[in-house]
Length: 569
Image (cartoon, rainbow, N blue to C red; front, side, top):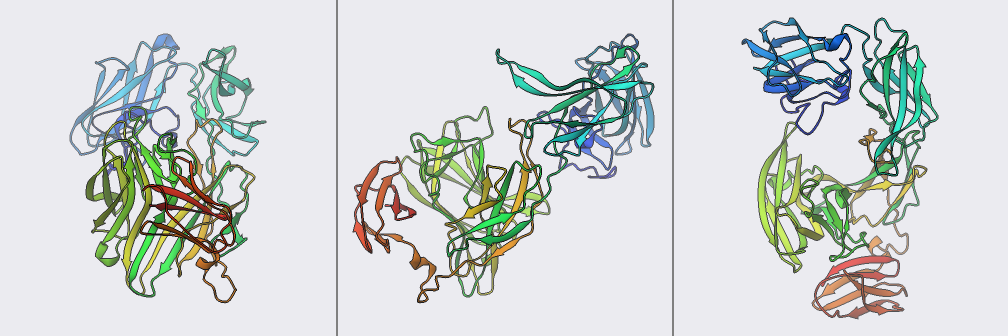
């Protein structure tokens, strides 16, 4: 990405908290600050730093030579300081407007040597090499040919060596709660620059190092390589089965190295007249565990409508954000998928009910993409109390690529949502699409998933696609996701009985004043629970319609036959 004349300044490859991806270097473990891609070389901004991984420079009495090529990015003379880690002085090299070769003699090397490049000016740098005058430690490469039973370890060739020593291991916790290496292969002699490792425990995170062998001398081990699949193949989505008026079962082919699958269901609508359409319409009734007093807490998640959340909580029919651990994790927030909010001159509405664990403040923000860059378009702060309240926010400035965020502002806050809705005004002929929900399969043998209770209206069309992913069983390795599968369009079934609509095939629940009405229950039991899980009303058998009142205002979960509803009373 980027070029020598125009480095990619939007995407730093190194920050104080994030090392450089091993995809960009021959050896993993590089780090730095103010470092960017520039068309195959690195661009270091003024006072930026680039640091190679730790290496063994104990040969040749600790003397080693750092070689590199560099030039000034903006044409003016500038400087590159090469210094040992922790040192405030070093060797300063002058860099001009043309590429030039540099060689710096360093001393004081040890078995764990670190040094850095400091840019005084805007510098392009490439072809960095360290020569210790002896047998070099191999530069490891990423693993390839990953399967459920094996992978290939790789490294660069080293001159003047007899062979290589390979170690393959995983990290385990011992009885003293210390992380130790458990070897699958230890000190295996390999005469090539790759080795196929077999007999792995699929899902277990593996690592490897390699050393050079010359006679009786074995060098220090290389930097550790984390074994990660290069990619995960996309599954093939098959036709849906068990199609009803309200849902279906999605199906797909298995993928060899997948540890889980994600099935994303989306809806499409073409307006036949002018009306308000809900891109998102959820009451979070699928969350049946937890309560406001004792919510289920997670670090991250995806909820209805494919909104992603950091520090989410779930509380029996409500979805929330937990800002009680900001020092350990990021601030609690949630973000919508990218919506087309350009209809009706960019006007749209976000609505929900909300309640806090205490009086608190939160912020709704809207963004649009300008090219690939998200740009803030509006923010609205709102106050939340310990009483459930309805909120509605009118926005304008929506585009074909817009999204919404909600963020908590104070430490210790927990904010709960219910009945969340994003709506736009459509004119006749307008078309919109929005994700309904992404389903995650836990078992790798599962190649099907039920999608039901999709909150559809007449005229909605449904489609789904599937992604496969690899996650290790320890949670140490970042998830590797496949491309999306083919898209399968699902035609939901109709009743076929006296032209009844799909809405008449299942019970309905409505609130009129202080009356709750359950209709078309077909003889099933009616059960009403508060959000704390306590039963507040029940009726064993109701043939057609039941009307009743509840003891107080609030959020209730109603089970009518085989259907579940949530109401705000």
